[in-house]
Length: 497
Figure 1: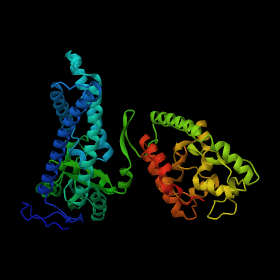
Figure 2 (figure 1 turned 90 degrees about the horizontal axis):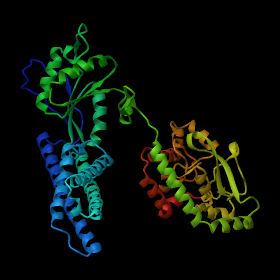
Figure 3 (figure 1 turned 180 degrees about the horizontal axis):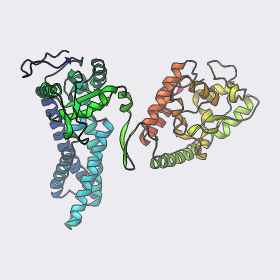
Figure 4 (figure 1 turned 30 degrees about the horizontal axis):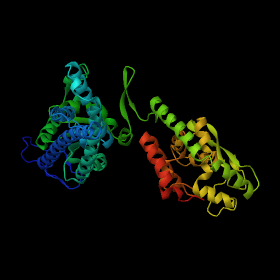
């Protein structure tokens, strides 16, 4: 889209301005009014549903458990809880930030709000010594019901609002870009995916910093063209101004930002060439310093403890359920072909440390190290029974012992033979990042059909993408989802030979 230059500016000359393609535009007032109306409707819907959920939980508990009717005070209590939840949401700007935050943050803020509301409510009735009139089980049931209601309501509203923002039906943020036209075009193309609309862009103006004064914002003096930039930007009513700085412009960025502070907008500075880097970084406190953290350890100590406890419990349950197979399969292997029942192979585990992975033998050979050759379709090395074991994933069951020993996890990137890892690590950057967590018996790549032969670089890249997605988005619920998909999804058995 193109935007015409303003003709009512008091300056005699115009600043260099250029347009940036940004999709279908809606006038700022219209887009903002639509968004405000939808956010108000979303907050109102949540208020009503929270009140209904709280009172319904009380009614169900009294009717089904106590075989009685709840007191009238539960109506007032439900309205109080709903009002507190609304005030917490508004006070923390939870709905207004839906424009720029991911779904899990939006949902987590709602869940933390519910926790705060019920903590405040319980503390209040305790301090006022009126807790005797409330059933503790009823309050717990209300908390669970309200939590589920908030999560479901926000999931639905997020699913409705985000596509509308991304398509341009609703303006999320209106931004002005300042910098080289090619840099502005690149930034705008990335921002539009999140509904951020570029309404105007300008070349970087000339600014002057008073070097004789201390380095503070009020010591910065802007030349007339920087002041003219402020004049040009003021009628546009943008939400943000982004300064895209290259090497020569970095010292002037503070001076320009100071000049733009006269406008009621958020001012951002983005070093050119680091947009992709900053997309995966976080500003963190490191001692008494502030740093830009690019990557972090995938799992905290607490998360590792939770995952380990789940692995041990799941492995024990799996061994108990599969115990008949540990009798039948070894006998079948012995009857089918000569050789040992189990096959041990060295593979890379957590932090690239070598581990010995245990499997039921499904081949006539026991290849190891550099002698390893991947299994292909109709591979003559696979035994008759082995084809069945590999197709049904039964050959992987002994790895439950690897899980108990702590070498593997129930869910994680599948461990590759060391020779295969070393070959692909030379071709794919960040390949070894898949070893930042323990390897798993099953994984996100496998349940999405990316298993089996990796005879092309593209196949391994797709597998790596799914492994890294799992690492960057780990949760216990994701582990449970992958296990369920492993048991019931057809994709798990694709390319199993």
